[in-house]
Image (cartoon, rainbow, N blue to C red):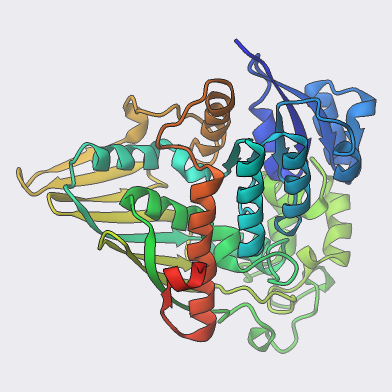
Length: 420
């Protein structure tokens, strides 16, 4: 079995998760670039990386001639483009965190550079690699639904998740990161296109930031929760409760402190001095907290997507075809399939079945699934329908950029005109 040598650029949450699955004989993580020492040291220790191969700046790592097979790029959204282009120039294959880049032009540049250089780029649309969506795709491929006519898909972000990532966190501000649809839901636009099996023809969208803004703050609420908010006991978004009192939520705690396993004392300082401690109504966030997208595809199918913060969280999908329909609840991991021919319901648990893809554990199985597929793509030339390779990913990113343009300009976007 061939072993793939891997370099990691960006050792935050996503970079750590992907490389945590690269500890068997298929992979050898040999270098890391990460400015935060605690995160860099985690990767160094986990993979027994030499001191000389641990860098603070990705530019220093990529100034070295190519010495590995794959570069995992998991920097912040706005910082994907430059290291991706440099790694491609050096001849690295890429596992590239989504979104590809914050502008359509940069997305196209990466795809064109990869094609010209002859390297492979797999984009981290991890939903494709879950047992849940793999089973839905198999049902469609097997003809259980006939021709797909319409999809209704909902991403329930979850009110606490919204507050953490998109009000206080790294993806709160369009100028600093990207728009909400690109940052959070390019997963979902990709999934709908994958299931329909056709490219987008026209797009419309509506949505706004309606709740998490200053005019909705209680009159006597302080700027920071830790300053003693009189509404702290009943507030859903009290930072003390979310980041200090809930010691089981490693995701929130690690992200806020920008280190692995911070202490409560360290978190208290974070809540006094950073965005993570601010009142959710008094942050510099501008991304939407609800949005709908309507898509007409070239094959005549249509899809509606609903992203909303005001819920517990989860993904739900209804796919309607000429021979049947299905309703899927990703949180419960169940699919209810109804056949027009038999007039009977069949309830399916995808984890109980042997699927056509290689799917296991995290993000509903998607994180480990994409790492498994990365190996097959690079080492074994896998080219099956699971691949979220750069060409199709950029095509679906175009739909996201068009949807945001449609939202802002209140118009229906013709995709051929948009792409040019």
